Structures are given as structure tokens and as C-alpha cells.
Amino acid sequence: MRRSVFIAVLTAALVLGMGTVAVSQKKFPAGAQQKPETTEVKIDNFSFGPGTLTVPVGTSVTWTNRDDIPHTVVSTEGVFKSKVLDTDEKFSFTFSKPGTYPYFCSIHPKMTGKVIVE
Amino acid sequence: MAGRLKDEISHDHNHDGIDRRGFLKCMAWAGTGALGVMSGGVLKSYSLSRLPELSTKAALGELSFVQISDSHMGFNKPANQDVRGTLKAAVDKINALSAAPEFMLHTGDISHLSKPEEFDTVDQILKSAKPKDVFYVPGEHDVLNDDGKQFLERYGKGSKGAGWYSFDKKGAHFIGLVNVMNLKAGGLGTLGHDQLEWLEDDVKHLKHSTPIVVFAHIPLWSVYPEWGWGTEDSAQALAYLKKFGSVTVLNGHIHQTMQKVEGHVTFHTAASTAFPQPQPGKADSPGPMKVPAEQLKSVLGITDVHYVQGQHALAVVDSTLA
Image (cartoon, rainbow over all chains, first blue to last red; front, top):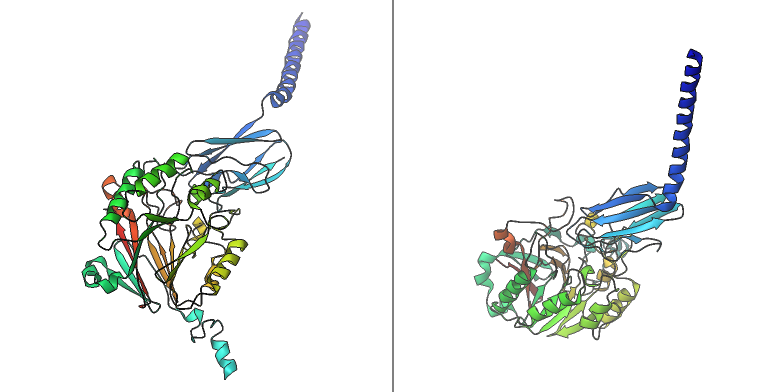
């Protein structure tokens, strides 16, 4: 009797454990396919923060201009280019290939940043 | 002997025995309300309280013009929520000048976001100024999203390239340059090869005694490169102007008055009519500076310039809108 209770508890624990593994295995790949991870870059005081951002492939990066002055987000190598962003306006780009993507503000070219996609 | 002299004077392009490195170099906060008179390459400063002594016909000169800059029409942030009102105040100031200016120079950032209605508003307000001719060069805010197409259509008739040109008034040669296009990551303002070539050709046949006035948006001298306040290839442009006895360079962009004299060249930046910016390095960024409302007009302004023919002198007078 005692033995069978022990086995039942063990079995339940194993089933639960496997269930947890199964759920977690299922969850992440499905999430990546349905909706890309989103990461923010904030523009404050004429600088991009963070200046260097490392993200996995498939990430959508959103830049938000929080300055009182308009800025742009322009890839140095012509990969992406925002329209001019006035205060609180945003620009997003989804990085589908690994690599290093340097960018700058074409209005204030001293403002530079880069996105590293792994 | 000749060899020794050559060693001492290695950059004597004017054949006047003056080495460029030996030129008077000074950099001073002109502050609003200061008057600089350049004569024979030496800057003399006068405070505005001494203006009456200078306001003879000779001091005021035969050619007067006014520079306005950075009207940023469309800007509506806390630093100034009424840029129309302050531009109108600038026009009132111009209309009240005792020696009526013959024309105006606008050194860029006419608009804040290159919107047609912003340019329209500025045009409308400037119509009430006594001087009817306005000569423009673009600021980076005037060429957003369309590589300056709209600016050229509105203000660039008869200009070359991205909007550069020259004209003559009463023996003085005026040159409008564009240094806000094709800016490179990490860099400063840029004139570019084509414009520099044009400039070299434009001044080639002028007499060395011709007074030269150059105007462009971003300073043509290194004010504060950390904030992008300078022009990458301005040294090349200035090399073409080295032979002239009197060169006055008028810029905007930094929303404050500043002056520097280097040899025969006087550099000057004008105040904005819209909002002030901090002194170089005195804030986290060059963004708009908020001052108490009652002080705003004392940090905005216009620049009034007088040229005395034959006297080799240009007087640059800043006055605030207060």
C-alpha cells in the first residue's frame, strides 16, 4: 500500500515534470514565429540609448525620439532609413539577418549607434 | 637668407610677409549687444553703450544689410511656443533700425520640419520687413525628407548645385554656401567637392581688395566639433579666400552669437529668432534651452552689418529682441 502510493506520487511528479518540459519546448519556438521580440532604443539628449544593441535574428527594434528636436535613424550602409522623427515619434525595423548594422542621425551626424544581430 | 625667410614664413600666400600662424587669433564670446569693427584685419570691440560715438555716417557705412537665422517655424516646445511672435519681433527690430538695411540674409533653419506651411508662414512674416530682398541658404531643418528639393524650388532660383550662389552689392562680393547636405555618420557639416570647385572658380578673378562676405548655416570654423558645430572641409574654402584683405563669414545653427578673428577673416554666428541653445559643452546636449519667459527675447536676436566702401571695414552689430 505504502509502496503503491510512493510510485503514484513519483509517477505524478514525472508526468508533471515532463509536462512542464513539453510546454516550455512548445512555447518558445511558437512565440518567435508569431511575434518578433521587440527592443527599444531611446533618443535622448542627442544620443541613442543604448548606443550598441545586441539582439537575436528576427528582432524588431523600435526607436523613439524623446528630444525636443527632430532626429532620423539612417543605416550607414543603406539597410534602413526612417523619415524625420519629431518628438515622441517612432521608427521600427525588423532585423532578419545576422550582422552589425551601424546607423546615425542624418540631421545630427555626430549621433551614431549600432545594432548587432546574432 | 631667402631659405631662412622661407622657413619662418611657410604659408605666405598673400606675399605680405604674414604667416597664417602668426595671424592674430582670438576667440571671444561676443555676447549680445557687442559691436565688432574689423579694420585692417584687427578686431576692435565696442560695447553698445559706445554706439552713439560710432553712429556717424562713416561708421554706419554705405551698405547695410541684416542677417537673421534659425527661425525654426513650426517649433512649439517649451523653449518657445510662439516662434511666429518672436520672428515678428525680429522684423519689428529690423524695421526700427536707423540705417535701413538694403536686404536680408537668412542663414537657414527657416522651418523646423521642412513643411510647406512653415515656409509659407516665414515668407508671410518677412513680407512686412522693410528690406524686400532676402537671400537664403538652407539649414538641415529645411532639407528634411526630400534632399532639399522644396528648398531649391522656393529659394534656390538661379543657384548652383544644392543651392549655392554669389552676387555683388556696392563692390562687396557675397557668397551663399550650403553645408547641410550629404552629412556623413560621425561627421560635421560638409561643402563637398563640387561646391569647393565652384567657389575656387567664383573668386578667381576678383581683386584682392574686394570685401568678401560668406554666409552658410553651420559655422565654417570649428566652434565645438563634439556637437557637430563645424564644417569638415571649411579649411579648403577658406584657403580660396586667403588672398582677400577682408573676409566676413556669417553663420547660424548654434543659436547664439560668437565671434572669432583669424587674420583677415572675421567669423560670426547670429542668434536665433526662435530659441537659444547652450554654450558649447555647458549642457548634456545642444538641444533647445529653456529660459524664464521674461528673458526669452534677451537671448534671441538679429545681426546688423555695415560695410564702409574704401575703408576696409565691416561692422557687425548684434542686437537682442528684448
